[in-house]
Length: 113
Image 1 (tube, helix red, strand yellow):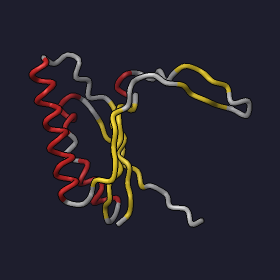
Image 2 (image 1 turned 120 degrees about the vertical axis):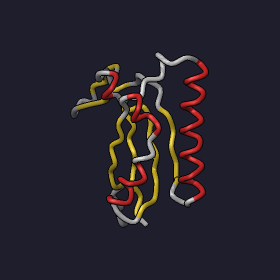
Image 3 (image 1 turned 135 degrees about the vertical axis):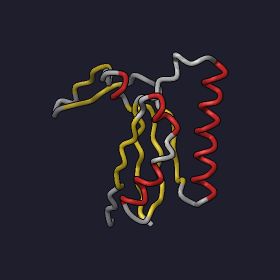
């Protein structure tokens, strides 16, 4: 099994009622439970908006990221799958597609040290 990262974007819950938000979170909990039961889930967290960006040889620090809301990374999972196709299939259960969310599926590179 290889490791893959799901980067979640979009999926704004702010326009939903508290009851609808709770129902949406239950979908997330069910997805994590399913991935865990299938021994696929490795780690994951939601990300708080904002932060800092460091760049260049002078390590310039700026506030951000300030990408458009739908482009801002909202969280991530690390999962196990046999290949990219299987990881992509597992990402199809992402609960926020109905909220115009998206998932970027990337293989985690291994380095021999």
